[in-house]
Length: 441
Image (tube, rainbow, N blue to C red):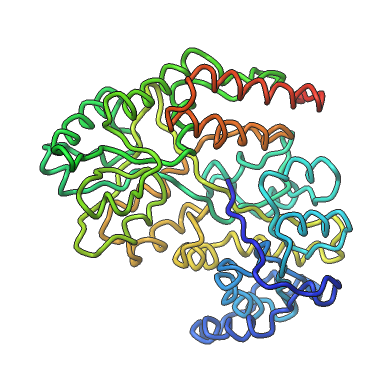
């Protein structure tokens, strides 16, 4: 799931003032370029005709805008015949992005909502990228979600420079007190019974009025829990929701019982507060969770356990496209491809943008950062265990049901598990019928 960046300052709605062209941003980029020293002009710069391309890094003036800023000058130093002009959307979020795409006036490389990729890919508004990828990239150099997460009827219309990975941040002190050994490899993680057994040991450290919980998690743990129990979103041709199965209900019922009957887990609590008070042993989510804790709190990273059959996590996607309306296709592709190379991948990773899609960027991203003394290798490796959700026009409805809505009510103990699964699938099936959707091929 992607992270939205809403606009902060109201601005006039004319085209000229809708975008802030990034002169100050480019100046900021000079710092990084100055450190790079003289470089040989690459072949790509000699073969590309002079061009000016526009780039929209986010759907609002948030942190992502500043994260990309140092890269522009560095790219232009390597490609002196190409000029990159940042176009920052000041207000309107994804609705504004969609409106600009519809009007065929979007930037030459632009961030789009991952939930809209299928719509735009099938509407003829985005450039089909497979011919460019096949000519200039090695797919095996990147983690599988790069080529799976946003696939549209077997075709690639977007690139994903970075992804999100969710795993467990755990308290080394509580694990030691409970005598619990930590898994350090996704392929050798706990099975479900081991997880439950260790959760009991950890919760046993508590006392009346100061309970200790084994795990806290957000609602988006719902989908990987079900997926890891062998359940998939739809039937083979995607004409029916398949999440309302006994296997889905089995794992979710166990989690609901661990929350509300056995009280080994906690949902909807202040995880950081509990963790800091030594009352929470594990938190499922962002690996950076631990870096926001007080420095005296001891913690490390571990993989998510299997939910009966397999281990999955689900993060977020940040995706970029080249509108078919661009007049500078070659330069736009060159810049997008450059963002997928080592230099940009490491810079964005170290800046906290996400997990680099390029496998080789993993080590330099984390070795010298705030996670350098932790089991950080689990972060890039987690992309090998990402839930490969189907990318289709029903996807947003599916997420509305199983990443919030009924899913949240299950974890709160407000709704029976099978009832929530049936309600969710009914809504998804209604959307399938409304759109007369059937998977191609």
